[in-house]
Image (cartoon, rainbow, N blue to C red):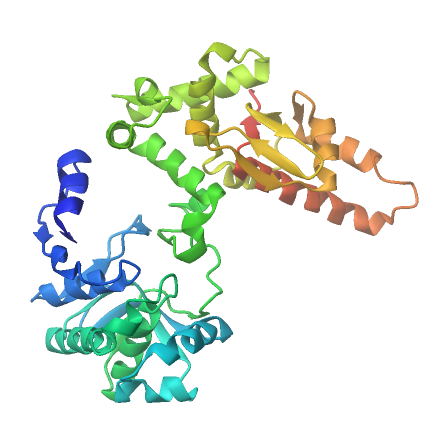
Length: 399
């Protein structure tokens, strides 16, 4: 890991992350506007003298990067096609650029429209990487007074991602992409899908707006609680979070966690959820939501009977669903008119067969027969999303 002194204290001394090697060198960047976060990445790239793969702090992996670098000069996450999204940012930044590197002229003129997403980056061509790093820093330094004033405008994209693409194109570098898709710069779908890891997805990148999306943040929190409970104990102490959940999860084994989830679902089914343990119930509700939509899909495909049960600590209003969350951060998600129908049918609990029968009974007699299946499919799709939010849970029927 490459960090600064504060990062070392937080990540190593206080959170006890198990890095085998730590380089503390990023304090050298204190003269730069903190919005230029990519400079820390470029400093990290430049610090390494052997082939490497750098992974962003908002990238989460469930599979090793073994052999993906191979003999390639470089590796990146994916190639991007830049659109009006990047172009509008560049148009805001361009008046502040007095000295434009010659390599950036094609992009500036609109004849080049590509960039590399560098959620991961590395390679075997260390001399080229160091040259790229120098040119990126020079690009910033030659315009430092002006770009330091660019508060909230993402200059990083251009001196990191676009610059790298232009250099690789000019010098014919062999660039491997971990994700073999050309993705639009504002079209990253499914990169925060915690519900489908690790079965269908082994790589997530919480880029851009994902880090500010409450449903994504809550899902990540639940994932950490379920699989890395000891780190939640460290986080609560570091951030002085109240009310604490550490007492419920400290020293919890995976077997114990699975038992608690099963007991929680049984309590929901039997209507015996103990209100005295409201915080614990929220923890178990959120953990149960991980993979719930995937579990629902498997039940539907199997054709077997299963139960649908509302969870706890949420309320349904006309325009939104309010979900009470840990640490007082309530989450609101848009409600659809069909939600009241779904919850009315489910009541305290129901099985999938009764649900489908009741749902069809809500339709007017004139509703076309060929459209009824589509309506039921739509309801299951909505229920899947509600399960992802943690307000419904699927429960396997006992034999």
